[in-house]
Image 1 (cartoon, rainbow, N blue to C red):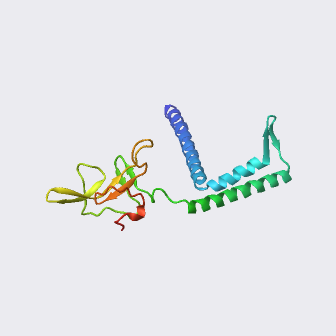
Image 2: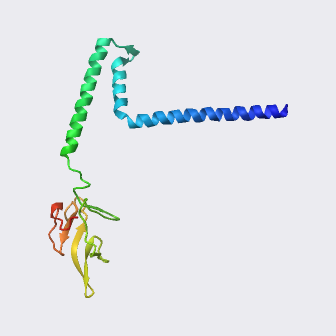
Image 3: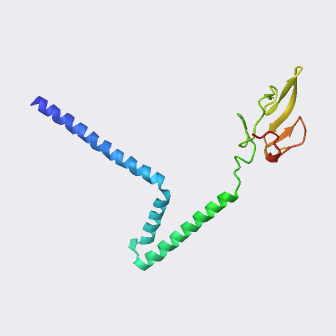
Length: 178
């Protein structure tokens, strides 16, 4: 009887874990589907909110004609918003690829811009690159971060060519593109 009792306890315990495991798998599949279908979820939410009224008296049913009108308006608004969003994305330039970014750890250049491999970084000034001739460093390019608003200097990242003082903000004037 001891073996039968022990088997019942172990079987009951592991049977519960098996059911929880299966339920977890189903929930993770549903979660993955939700994450990959956000527009369908939004449309479902629009249908639900079109079908009911939530008032101080609780949930009130909605007539089919009212539901149809509300759902059509929601779909039209959703469609126009998507259209406007996609159109706007085409008009707005990508600031990550259209600007110099200077971080505390280094410089991020736009795609296609590069610093020639024969240049070395100035050991005495970060963001300064050039060549060594007869033990003297000659700056070819210097990339500076913008100054904080309210402080002297330009508020945007910029670069200087050949040790010049001129601040160059136009990335199209970058001399070395791949």
